[in-house]
Length: 346
Image (cartoon, rainbow, N blue to C red; front, side, top):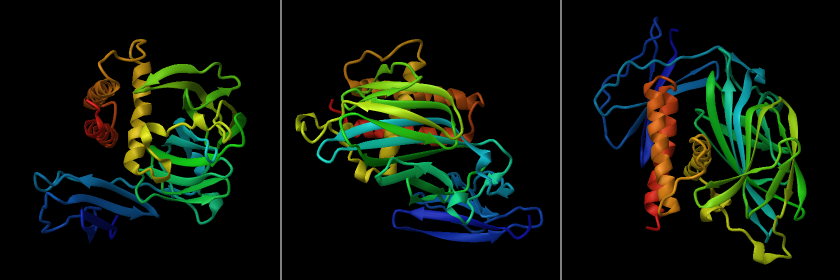
């Protein structure tokens, strides 16, 4: 494709600048006289039919190997987008204002050979439901150029979705009316697999047809876990929640997860909580073992993360996962290891 604008991004701790070039008749591009700075992060991107494609660059050894940016024809039809795995964590309850803090993790799947691009109207955007009265919405995703707007009873994702799998994570708070109530959740794009988790001291959970929740230890806490496969597109589930603290029983106010306040959750905090869910998945697959015996919960979690990194590397070297997926998951796991080192109780 001739004449496409390709942008080289340079980001430092003090700011960023961009350099552009154009593709030639063969669709090739080149940036001349770029001096490497070890304190600078580099990336390259291109916009095609309103979708943005890009990748990070490793310039430490000089000019990187040949970089290929694959672009796709675009569509506004969201039927090409579905959900693979989705997790909902009822993380913390606060009796002072009777609100629940929630974290959701969704794997968007585009199995077509087209890129989904948002349209101009709200109904042409990817939309996700939130409980009535939800506030403090915070979202993190590695979809390039992604943003969101909060709409009635939910939010719309402002991002193009190229073919492949893409994770989004979002947190919010919402008010609950009493110690026990029913929360209805609609899965607009369905889900191949669903996981609902809640710390045992926060709330009891039940969904008709899913059986009794399993009790699983993750890190320092015991969780109730419900799972389901094959949630249909547009299907709704009613979650029965019980045992929530109310204003009249202040001694049951529950601390937020590891002291994290959801009103200022940052992307790194979302990544840390995502690792907790990944750890759960690793534990349930480890030959029936529910947790590893060790001298402390921090040691347990560190050992699990090292095992996950080892498994991740094996999958990457065997070609089971892509370079991008390997890099993204390794980044999150290493971030959690760093956090464990900073906050270890010894």
